[in-house]
Image (cartoon, rainbow, N blue to C red; front, top):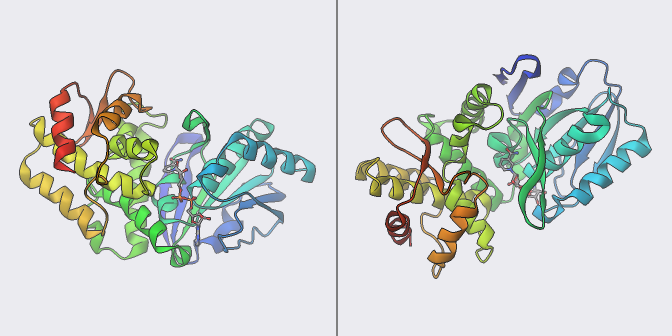
Length: 333
Ligand code: NAD
């Protein structure tokens, strides 16, 4: 079992990565927790044994289930059962479960401990690590939430074995991102080591910037176009697929702004293609709409901020060159 620490002072925790990690649950439960509310979804099919009195609470599946109504339902169910502030929530599922159950844990009794057991590749390398929890509003994705660090994260790589192929590929999109944030040789590592390498990278970034200043923003590499494609809503793309296209776009844009050369762009294309992920935006995509959506991205604090590769590595950059934005879109069409 690989153990990755997330050093955050009195909010520090461990991430255990490897086959069978879910069986280590009892060991990582907070001291004194007498009951565990296990939040999961019917189609996940992985069970955990917290080793203390527990009850399973099933939430609906899909991004549409990630809303305040589900959080209210969970909190009311916890209250009916008698979950106390000293107990624990265990989230077993993909990013939809860990984001929603994590947020419910953050606000129930003004905060009860949560342990994440992510069962998707995307959840293991990204969503369950770092303490961002939250749900969607009709007005936009992840608009309501809280920073709530888990007490521990168990990335059981056995659970990845039952993922539908498309969900697996979606996780590879986030994994490809880490290849440009300094994780070398990712594609050649066995799954548990690859997951652990990504977790280590995210843990380093989060430890240096828990609440999203500039450093944590690098985790959004590839996400500006990715989010725009998702928000446009007309395309059949999973999150990681949209991020994969976004990585190639970010490289094309960085080249047009004189930040990287053609060889580095080719490397982006190679990494993304090696994971069998898309490198082009869907045919017929509306460039005007995508550029308009860039400006609405949550990270656009001051105009259009892109996370771009460059001589100092990947960093947030303010971009106002409309021609470069559009030329880079042509290059990924
Ligand atoms: P998901 O949670 O919807 O899971 C995908 C599907 O796979 C679901 O139908 C789920 O029930 C099923 N599933 C999960 N594990 C399974 C398994 N082991 N076997 C078979 N089926 C399984 O999607 P996701 O891609 O894991 O997460 C996406 C969500 O994560 C988005 O809402 C996104 O906003 C969020 N996210 C959060 C962060 C963060 O830092 N908090 C980071 C990235 C993404």
